[in-house]
Image (cartoon, helix red, strand yellow):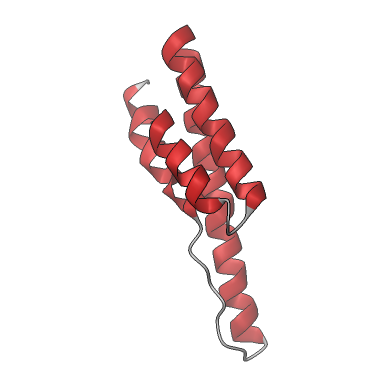
Length: 94
């Protein structure tokens, strides 16, 4: 998972550097979890899920804004939405 989020971080850097920083931080926490213990992996999974939820809510807010103002939708795919892939890790750790 650390490699996955590191790749997403580099892909996101040209679009949004702040999101890239968050994705890279998640990758570093996963990497630390593989060396130190399962609690870091659990924490990185929680951060990734919360970041994916925030990215999804931003996408929905952009869609609602375009509907209310009768403008074309400027919805952009955000690599933060890929944080949903860490959800099975949370379910497995229960």
